[in-house]
Length: 430
Image 1 (cartoon, one colour):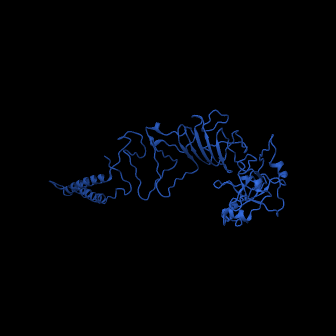
Image 2: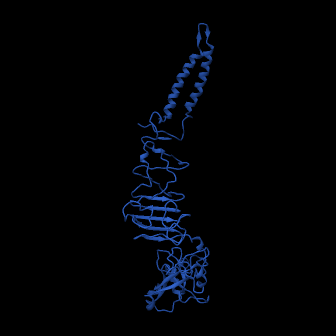
Image 3: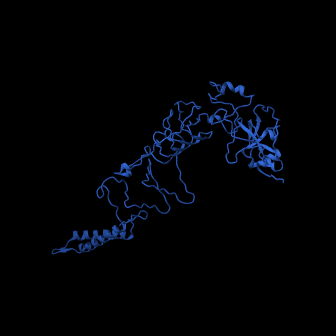
């Protein structure tokens, strides 16, 4: 049975892939170290269409580490990502393990193989990059950026110019100060090249380098920390600026953080913590730093919660505390509803009936004022015609005219209900 492969890696493997001078029987059970010389990441690559178009993204072109190609006319060997769901593409000059496994032609030829690559070899134990230039480049750089430290080859950049080709957009100078994370026993840590990371860790109390989530609690309590960007002024665990010395997450200084805790206290400093709305119940104000339990903390320069289709629901067993250093703004094209047995505006400090005054029911007050105005208006009629034995009382009559005019105008206002708000309504309650 033949398989017609028309797209993707299969097409590029079938028609375009040069082979190393090895047989499948000897290559399939071995791993080769190879240097990355090029990679297809988008449609601007000269071999984009030749290697399957968009289905060829991630194809790299390699040379053997021990036999680097120094002539441009020698074709490089293509290799393909070994994992379909994890995209960890190498940089140019990084070394990758190469394995030879079945290619799409395996149904026609059971011995047909192609080169696949695994994630880059951890030459420098660096999460930023692990590039090693070709032999014709390394001697020139060795005295500058690749000094031998103690017994091992440890790469420690001492200036801001590495001169290593890593790609078209990746600039090592932009990430030189990105420090690796310090691991603890049992941790599983995923680190990106740009100081973004996920730590699956736990509470670890009796340690040489304490962290900010293990001050209390029980050893082994799980914690997950998602961090995007270390702080601009962050320092390593030795309180120096050396970028090769590990650091720890800091929820207050890292760019953006999500902490999922289980019985850990996290020393998050709130930017606004105004407790006035609690009034006499200040002991009920949540204390973020002393809370010991299961919680999720988010901290960043700005938080945006946006629902594209339905609702945003905030629900709490106790209180929901909203605090801001400038304003709290609520806007809606239809209505804003506050429902509670008691609603305090301004503050809840004081005693009801003294410092805390009741709101007035607008329609009922309007009707009461109208009834009272009508009574005053009737009295003004008598004043207009006020007379004594000696004759009309002009001062009283003048006052009556003024009072009647005022009542007439005030009645117009009350009847139009213009003094009542069209936006704010108070529930009469029980």
